[in-house]
Length: 51
Image (cartoon, rainbow, N blue to C red; front, side):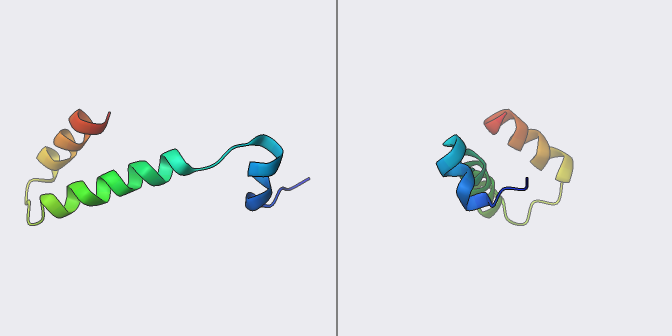
């Protein structure tokens, strides 16, 4: 039986709030470091702050 995502909360009390929060943090981090050319450094900083 395939579940509709909106019914997951009512059946399992599960949401994707943690994923949405993490995505918002990454988006904010990207705006702070706009124009960074070193992608390796960007990913390094991202993992050190939010991992």
